[in-house]
Each structure stands twice: as C-alpha cells, then as structure tokens.
Length: 243
Ligand SMILES: N[C@@H](CCC(=O)N[C@@H](CS)C(=O)NCC(=O)O)C(=O)O
Image (tube, rainbow, N blue to C red):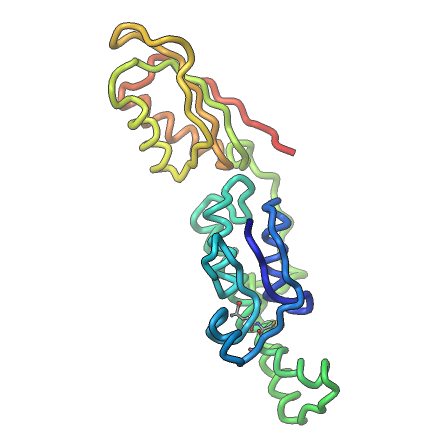
C-alpha cells in the first residue's frame, strides 16, 4: 500500500493527495509529518521537505515526480489528456502555477502563518512578480477573453475501448497487434483469444480491452493492423463507459 507523508496545509502535499483521490488509488497517509533539517528526517527527504511517498519501501520525493509516477503506475483513470501537445499544456500550467505563483506568494507565508511582519520591500517584490501573471495570463489571453470550448468530436472522446476482431491464427499475430497499439500510446488492459485453436491460419476472435485512450488513436492503430494483414474483417469498436 502506498503511504503519503506530509501535512494538510502544504500545497505540495495536497497536490499529490488530490491526484491519489482523483485516480481512486488506495493509500495510507501520515498527515503529521513536518519538514525538518534533522539528520533523521533528511535520511527520508534529502531537502527536508514534504511530501514524500513510500512505494514498496522506496521513498519518492518531489510532488511532480510523484504525480508522474502515479500517472504511469495507475493509468486506469488518467489525469493527463492523451495528445502530446495537450499533455505539454497541462505540464506548462503546473510549472506556471508552481514557479510563478506559489513560489512568489510563498515569500509572504512566514508573515501570514507566524505573524512575523514582512518588509515593504518583500511586499512590493511579491506584488511586482505576481502581477506578471496578471498582465500576461498563463493561457496567453486574459481569462475574460478566453473563447468558450467547442464540443469535442466523438472521435476525441477519451475512455476505455472494447475491440473485437477476427484474426488469422498465426504465430506473432498478438505481438503485431500489441505493437501497433503501443505505437499509438494505447495501453491494453487485456487481450484474449475466444474459442479453441484451429489449424494454423484459421480465423479466431480476439478481444482487446484498452485503458483510456481516444477513438481516433484506436482507429489509426486498427488501420495499421489491417495493413499488416493480421485481421480478416473490420474490427468492432465499442466505447466503454466507466463510472
Ligand atoms: N518542490 C517540492 C516542494 C515541496 C515544498 O516546498 N514543501 C514545503 C511545504 S509546502 C516544505 O517542505 N518546506 C520546508 C522547507 O522548504 O524546508 C515538491 O514539489 O514536492
């Protein structure tokens, strides 16, 4: 079982906690774990920070590295979109928020939490730096000018897919199918052959269940599998609604 260590006021702790909750991954939590520069704590977190995640006895630090590990290890409910550019845009937004918002206003946290006054210089530095994000919004446009999103075409829908295909029963057919799926970044939950094996070259039904992906990627992979001469007739594709 994963164990998340940190405390609930920490944005970084909550970032990982939200990812775990959103993805529905079971985890234990020590929410009384505070940053420290003591040797005993530095052995667990080299910079003395929170959070860290314990994965089968291995300690993982840095919230972004932890979230990316969760995304890779638990792909069933992805938090990133599929398309490379859209994935990069999410990561871009995370970097904007962490580097240019959170780290800027953090200079005031001491004053806010401990009552220790901060100087006028700190205050005006923070105002100047946070204003950068207001003058030129992270999306490149002020929020008021953002266009309403158009409804996505069905082919862009992200979810799991059930795919049934009639396959020539020859050695290496499964490998070809799995390779073409992987080339389109489609992760397979299962691949099974229905019915008994006949003579080599006979047709058998093969059923694939994919993890979340989009229909256009499924269609592209199937076109390639078709060109490989592995499938006999057009595959049936059914989108799976989960939750
Ligand atoms: N880059 C780290 C930042 C973590 C961080 O700064 N955590 C704060 C608590 S919100 C902390 O431990 N501060 C104590 C310190 O910097 O010594 C991450 O993403 O996990």
